[in-house]
Length: 282
Image 1 (tube, rainbow, N blue to C red):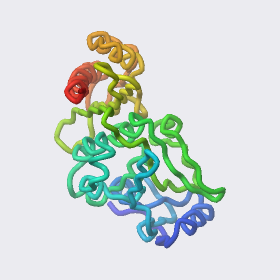
Image 2 (cartoon, one colour):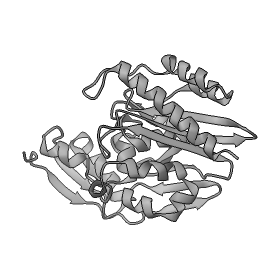
Image 3 (cartoon, helix red, strand yellow):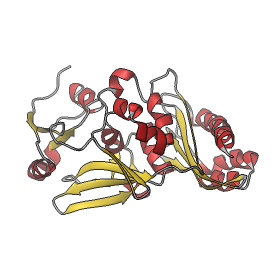
Image 4 (cartoon, rainbow, N blue to C red):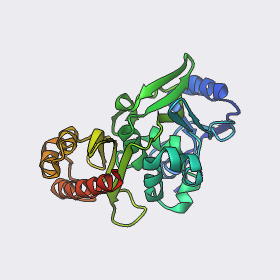
């Protein structure tokens, strides 16, 4: 299939992109990596009248580490992030998740910001950002603002970004020697969307875990924290954490699996990620 007719412009500055969004409003879509947008255009699931290309805007693909925070520019490609020493050193959870995203050809074009802005509930990076207690930088006609990940993901493909705003970066605390992380997912084939996935982040405190965040993806309309399981696992009760998932998660049936099977997979993933966390503990 071919997309419906649309106009195209390549923004040369963030201000220009914001101005174009304000001018065209709901009739405009932003183009970053295009790995999700282009298929929807071709299938006419999306039919904007104006496509605003962000690839001409400089400095949106930078990695900045300062004051205990790492900020990753929205236009950084997944493949670039995989090769970045700063990601490996300061964002090990992101480093674990990146190789699981789609296939190399897609990671060569797909962007960090594009994945976060799309907010696909089966995607890896939104769950990682929430597990890291991160935030999202957005810019609009009223200036710049930072939105906590807890408040950013609203629902199915729905975020806190206003129609005239642009996501410019994600940010979260840098990993320290006490940081612990874990990541695992089940997919029918490597590179497919996960049936269920789990991103975890915590702080080692003596022989226990503190500030644990267990975030599942593929089990609802947005990434979901398993708060009861977190509490049990921080007390060292893995069996109790597995049982607690019954009250934390209620995944619906979908074309990939039944809700009951997803619950089973979620329990298996919790055991695997708990093992990863314990292996990294001092």
